Image 1 (tube, rainbow, N blue to C red):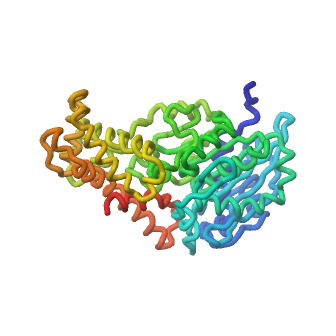
Image 2: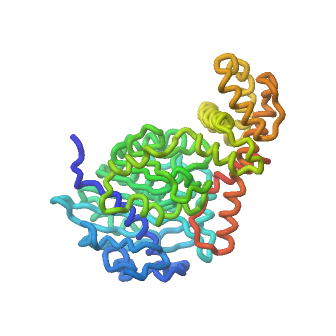
Image 3: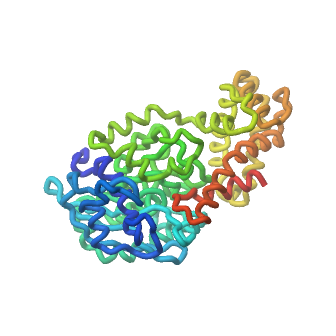
Length: 436
């Protein structure tokens, strides 16, 4: 039996909620957030009250739910969360009735680093830990979930009495929302999950276990195609609804058109992408039709970002795209033990090189593309026999050397106190390992 449409948030409602979760951080309303938790009165003003009004500043767009169907919702509690031992406002619980159904929203905010690198450290903590029967998840995200769970316990009866529980978050908040959703789903609740710019959370099958518990049709994953947090990250972590043909994997064209721009990760941009009153989830899915999902777009940007634009050819882009596909596929076959020591990178190069002759025999056009990619990487190769493991590694190094400065620049911006959402640290670590 299908779920009634009134048991889902609209794209506008979900995006507004993900944005409003940031106002639980002290002084976010003034545009100069600090460590601490905002007052409930101020959060209520931003979530269901007048919001920022015409003089929107600091947090960006006025995303109060007042003009929406959730305008009469009740703000139950503002709760705290801890990242790397630093406690700040982290989200809120909202309750409302819709079509005779009792519903609850649990909103969690994304990464910030004002006057502290606590959120950054959570993103960097890429080790794994168990999460109930689901399997292994990101250690930093699990730690933050554990701290949030303490605050949610005080609203446990209200949440458990609800007919529907909506979990919403952006960036780090999306990762924590994923774990919150899995937690309440495991307790028998009907849960809907909505994430924007969410990093990978589960590993080695945990994401599949969460999908099975929640139901893939109840997981709404929205991302921009050049959002660095969602695009770059090491195996074995994986996205919920991460397959290109997943109906609710709603990847949209990035607003800036720039390679992995941090602005592509900004929640305000996600609001602009899906927050219109005319938008429904089918319309958001339709926007995804304009996105290339086969790595070709990243390959072209890698080429364009080099100082050798003469190699910006379709064949070279196809060659890099093919290598990225093969790289991702083979890592999944190697298993975590190999990847943990980063020996999988070299093993990938050896295995792929050993098959180059066969690939050339089967598809000479594809081989030509890979040769062009080698030339872009300034590796002298004239035929398939010369595509050794060393050569393939050199091509991969060239690819990641373009990506690495983007991650480094983002981290340096945070170090200067610039309030920007952050790259998941695993991407930097992987890129560094490939280059070093």
